[in-house]
Length: 147
Image (tube, one colour):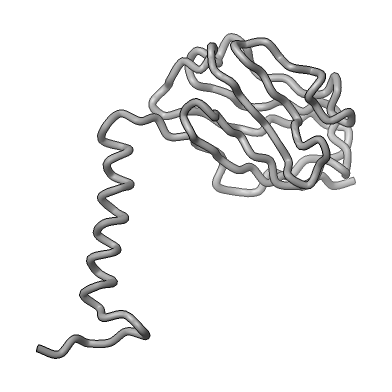
């Protein structure tokens, strides 16, 4: 029996691979694993404004005892905010964000780990990663700061 070719792989193989990926993704959703959700669009802010980078777990999940990380890979050090067991680790934070970032402490138990950046600057433009290492979940937020 001849297989129809689609590039280098037979269509039946591509279809089987697609089904496998779908099952793996569905397994995470069905077995109660929370998903980390960020915004689907770029956030835009004006310099000097406060901005909230949304990030939450669905379904809601208490992460108050876990490590939470907000990073931007283009920074050194890369941490914009990091906490372990609800204690912020200020010494790991990039100096340009000291005193300007916070999370909603009362909301962490509900899975809300959104980050507030106060008095944003044009240098704050970039892609931020919201990450919960204990769950191996991450979401990305793109921020553009205008003048």
